[in-house]
Image (tube, rainbow, N blue to C red):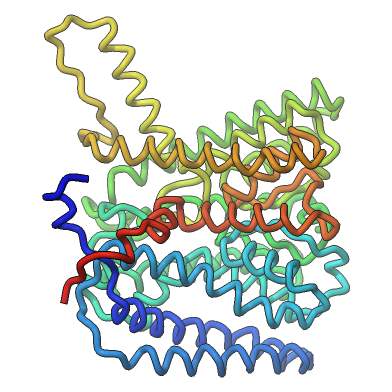
Length: 486
């Protein structure tokens, strides 16, 4: 870095981090009161006491830190550190109530990280025998993790302005979160609540109990995938209830700004409709490929393939992680199709994970321009465009960098599994599922899996949820050492 550039960089300010982390803790305190109420309703007092202890602890911490006087202007690196840290802090404290259901600390932490990051991978078996508060608590974490603790904070607590705008930086670009103000966050919260209400209505109408409908909907709209049954969707009576669940998953994988802009002409970001079309086309393509592989390689009947293929393919594409069949028994070709769908994921500005459909479309557009330049004269000027606008160089570089980092994390995480004797393709399946925050499993994840490998998947889930650049900023020395603004 040049001396001139170094002179324009500033380290994070402890007062800023402390104050706004305290305010985020207050939001988390309010959110934790919901599973506490569920524990009281179901008479599971041992879990209620643990949730009460968490509320008292983080509420006191938030009350103390939130009173610190600090500037309202937040730097980008400060916003990224805050977002990354709250997604690390939340599962750490929520591990305590989860341990009350009989889990070890490592399994409770794994479950809490999987919930907060909306992944859905689980080491827990015999879910039907687990306390109802446990089942609700992890689905509730997925619900508010999907919308984002940050966005909820903007909606409920933080003032409009620079703070709100920059705290939203890791969720989507400025084009998608116009202004990033508290009013905007409230609109997104309203959209999220409406989608949740519609999901509950559809599933109750499909014959599910209110409790199951609530849990499946919270895990669907957040594209989280935690089911209250070991067999996921296969445990539900009647295959027709699978489609409403996948429809809600698809709704959650679409940028939330798309819904708000539907009735306001000219206010909808042009990339939202493009992402919706890309997501549907990609899901249909993956459904056809998966169905073909199931019929040809797995010897599945056409009737079964026509049902399971779109359910699993769209579940993988939206990074929801629900499954209507045992994926550990399918052919390698079917697993490869699912891996591709999980890696791409849903839309930017949605609850979905993966590299995002928008970045895939960006890469396709850049590749198309490169190929056209090879056929054009030396005087031709060809510029990559998407959704009717020119793609800027920094935008292209950042998108390609994120894809490269995503692939690098998958490769580095996959190697230890192979070195420890796990099947290479099944290991790749689990790592992509964790990094893409999907939750589908080929059977590798279990309570017997070594703690070291559980830790790798935990890191993958965190990297995938907050996106890798925020974590790199967090460990970058200049983030913490150097000049600070007053």
